[in-house]
Length: 317
Image 1 (cartoon, rainbow, N blue to C red):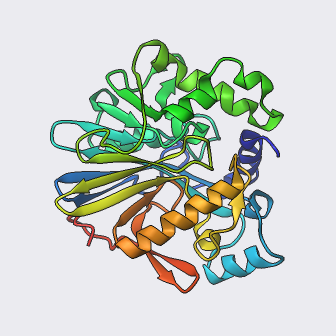
Image 2 (cartoon, rainbow, N blue to C red):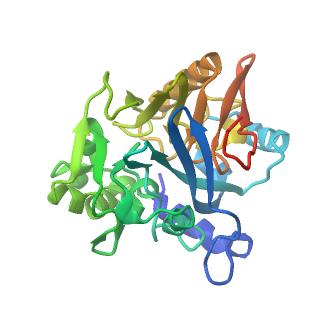
Image 3 (tube, rainbow, N blue to C red):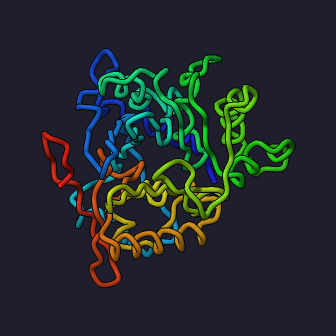
């Protein structure tokens, strides 16, 4: 498996002419979107987008399947892929779900801090960061060089995830393709751990009022979904349960090279899609086209993504 960062950097360089950034490096599109879920205000934040060669990255596919599904989804390869994060405003605290890439993958990404400011928030105001997992595009924005970007935040991550990436000696025995991930974990999460600002958790109970973690191992050993519940309304933050909407909603069995355990990742994706379709609740995905919020509808053995209906009032209807 090729190293994740090498793949993405190569794509970023080759596709820089179509990057959705202005000459000064800022986002060319609005970088935040608000909606209300019960008593909680949700703000989707764009970290930017990046073109990805899905023919090279997707696995467990049938001949011709990728091209057929991309055409049906009215997208072409390389597919412009969003990197999203989310702020939950509970009234007395601000909670960030994942932290973007920072400078990990080239100039078309790393816009989270800019989007956060445009949404009216300062990094110092963030009280907690919920990590779905410790891949570089989810933890990169935790640090700016040797400076903690969110100095007042507690970082929450599942115990299996922290153990896998930050247990001494694991990086030494890891396959070559994963070593960069371990280095990123040490660089981005390590300072918070050293400062005593990391809290781990198990499953089966609320982590914070109205927010419950759900185990979803496969993409990484401790990959976590977060369920938000308020006034009878629900939203589940999907993290990396999927990466390429046009392909994986139509065929959830399709996996991607970033999955550490592809079979388990596919199983968790099928489960998450099925439950979301039956439950009719909101979902938010880190790699769904920005703002990444919507519903999932079953269509036989396939699933259909129904994005949030745009509202200037942020109702999310």
